[in-house]
Length: 610
Image: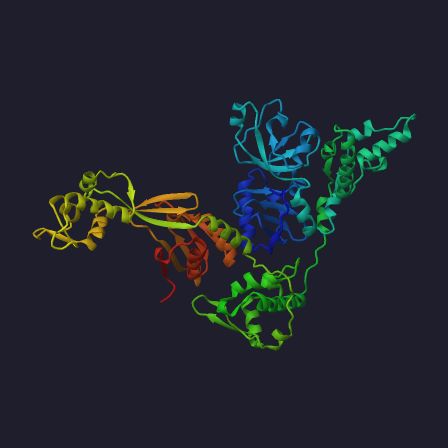
């Protein structure tokens, strides 16, 4: 999961609702964990931050502390604790015990865990299902060194003779999540000083003898990376690991049997982790500092990303897609910690200075950026930084664009033989179970015309109807008592014949394809009002166009900076996406631009407008 270098695209604090949702997800994911365990990792009165990475992973942590959980795809279905969290609460999740240091070398190198490397207790293999989160431990140490997901159930494992892959490793000690996040969350790395190397085997096996005291001291120092007086004391993990890795690399070239893995089994935590964590510093901005950063970020956005052609623009879009994208690296902006407290008040304050023009949308109840005064003194005096500016939702949109470039939507209307036209198909020897395009279906009826010589001699544009063709085209469609036609114009023959066939649609997106019988159902987008003045937008019918409701909800959540949920439609097959706010036009535009759904297949209904 974190073998390659990853870069965080966005950092933000979780709202109160998102905090509760995260804790509910954790309780469902880890049923054996108590509320005290979860509160120990995510204290109730501290800010929780989320870092969103390019590979769609979300990393959660306490602001100013270390990361505690990570979500593989950002949907909450595959969430795991980090090694940091398991050091603090080792029994948060079940764990496999390795047979020894030989196996741990491969695990901390990024390899998946195989069943032959697991130490099975006398009572037998523990019970587990496929896809469950499990940790990895080494003998004699409660601190896990890796986390992952089981690839099969315990029953399947026993049937396979405990062979094959047991655990797909997601995160391990000293991987790039550790390296990349370590510097951002814990700049002083204070909590790492609580991790110590206590090697009992070192005490017994490395005591120097009288005859070779000097040589033994030198050898022990080279192999262990620490002096004898450091045994049992707290040392910095980064320094020890770096020294031991360097020593192991040097020894490996001389003797392949030298391993660094025994040191991993000696990783332990001291009892004052919580005290050290509470002392981890974090520099927060003052109210004046937040106001100053807001003004600079707004001017930077007006110079670089806000174009006149994009106006008018909702205030929430200006904030999430432009202002936040222009903040300096490592700075977290929170409008609630400014002197304005609310986004609308801040925008109105900037409007009163003449820099921008802001009006409130009476339908959406939201401040809208109408225009920018690019002749304003503040705008002219500001010199924008020459640095690449990326929108906050670029990670989601760029990934979606790359995916959609390979999965372009294609809708093809096709037709199948019906009971009315089967005699025509049988006469020309056409397959009645095959799907035909409009032109192919027209060719069949014209072949019948040619075979039976039904072209009128005096007018080549008129087709004479025999009994078989007349029944195929008009039987059941003509009212009783009316006279059946005896002729039909050539230009009307094809369309009339096709209308008597069964209509189908082939919907294709990339390598995925589906055949829909009958007329193609449209995507329904409805905005309605709930509880007071709150609005919610509902989107259904996505399955018709092979759109994943969960993926769309995740994209819209990032794009509109709002909460989204996916619900199963009652009594129907399919799902419905619920988006907070009245964003009916924006959702329709997203479906057209990002998913290629034609506008004629999208229906709108805004119940909030009178």
